Length: 281
Length: 185
Image (cartoon, rainbow over all chains, first blue to last red):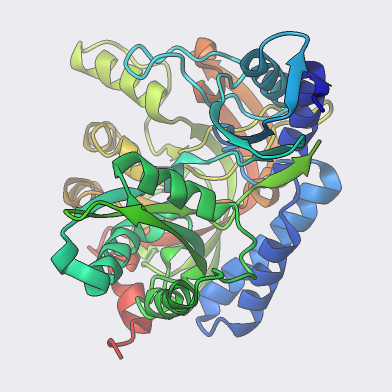
C-alpha cells in the first residue's frame, strides 16, 4: 500500500522544530549539563556551568534562543519506500519549513548563498538535507541546526589501517585539543569511523543526534566511547576552555565497513548547545 | 577576583586586570564581527575615516539573533575571536582597548594586546539568552546591510566576562587547562 503525504506537512513540522530546538535542549543534554555543574571541581568552571543552567532557564522561559548562532539547518529525512509525496518538491518543502521557522521564530539568519561571494540569503535557507530510503510507509525527520564555532573545529583524518585503534584515539584527542576553547566546551564529540571520506563525516554528524545517555549497541564501540570521554576530560580544557574536568559531555561513535586500504575517522565537534529533534510522520 | 568595571576602560584599569579576573562590565560598547571587521580594515588601509571612534573602545564580537517586540536585542553570546585576529592589531594600534569574544587569539594579537595595554575578555560561549539580559539598549551604528553583522552600539549592565589575555603577557587559555590536565593513564 502506498501512503500519500502532502509536502506541506513537512514544512509545518520543520518550521515548528526549528523554533523548539533553538529554545529547549533535549532531556539527555539538559541532564548531562545539570550533572556536570555538580561534579566540576574548578571554581570558575562551576560558575560557567551554573551560568549555562541559568541560560537554559531564560531561553525556555522568555523565548530567547539558547545561543545566538541558531545554526545552519541540517535535516535528515528517512523516507519509507511506500511513501508518495504530493503537493510539490520535498526539497522546497523542507526549505520552506526552515524559512518559516527562522523568520517567524526570531532566529538568526546565518546562511550565505555562496561561500566566496557571501551574500546572506536572509531566511537561513538552504538547509543541508540528507535523504535515505528505508522500508515501510513512515517518514522520520531529524532536524539538527549546527553552530559554526564548533563546526569549524571538526576534522576528517584518513588514517592507515596500521594506525589501528590507537591512531583513532589520537585523532579524536587531536581534534578536541585543537578545538579547545573555540568550540564552546563542554562539548559533544561525534565520531564516524570507517566508510569512505564523506561517509565518515556523515556518520560523525549523525552520531551527534543520538541520545547522549545511550551508548553504542556495539560493545567495543561503547567501550571506546567511555574511554574517550575520560581521556578528553583529562585534557583539562574545562567549561569555556578556562580549565576544569568537564570537557566532553559525551562521545558518540558510529562505525561502518571500510576499504582494505583505509581507516577514515571523522570528528564532528558540537558545543554544549547540541540541538536536535526527531519526529515521525 | 570579581571586579565591577565601568566603560570605557582606561589604560590604568587595563593595567590593573589580570588573566583569571571575573569582571562585570557596565557602559557602552560596540558590537562587530567578521564582515564589519573586513570593512573597517579596508577603510584603514585606504587611510579613510572610520565610522566608529576607537579611542578606549570596547568591541564585543557578536552577531545577535533578531529582537522580539519590546526587547533591545535577541540572543547575544560571543563568537569565536580568532576570526578577527587578522584585523585586530591594526585596530589596537588605532586605540581599541578591549575585546570580548571566545576562544584562542594569535601570537600576534597577544603581542599587540601587551604593546597597546589592552585586554581580551571571554564571555561564556553559548550563553546567549543570559547575556542578552545584560544588554539594555542596542542601536545600529553602520553597515545595516550586513544584517546580524552590522556594527551596533550597545549599553550593558553587569555583563559577566573573564580576563583571558592581559597586558602583562598572560593567557588564561594556556595556563588554566594545564592546571586541570591529568597525565595519561
